[in-house]
Image (tube, rainbow, N blue to C red):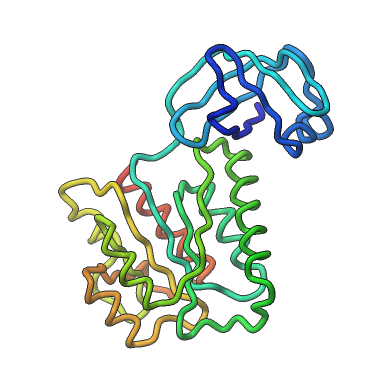
Length: 245
């Protein structure tokens, strides 16, 4: 069953109005839905709805609310991925797969050893990345669409991290303390978790010191060194398994 996201202002007591042109095109041209077909809708905040299509027009689709419930698929723990910006199209894969795994927000970070050579029009890349998160959320029926935040520098990172209950820092130089050790030792379940993943070049010594100085837990993800596009996915899967299942 298809899922769409709508503005809460378009949701009424008994019906919902879909007026986004891309969504309408998707309903008509791609999904080929008709009147009386069932569709899932989320308000991207708290509620999701099972709906029956009342009418389909080129500028507006109206659906009748059959069932309303709080998100059934969103994890309690909110994970923000601070991702060192990788080269080529790796960021697109990271966003897509981490969205499927349940990440709540992704913050691109310009680390000291970031090796991206084609910075181009970064605002256009950010728009593309948000669209990928949107599409992945619809495909896997998330309750919310992860936010792709504005890119930041390492000096901003240490200030932002103060707002999190738990800061997990997978670090290639950490050998003795695993993410399993950390997660299994937690007594009170954290609600807001920050996960910091470096770029292809890894973290500089200064960056590592700054991050651990504010309370980040340095961990290893295993015996091998994972690529930047793999490390975040692996860590999120481990966090979800330990804290959610």
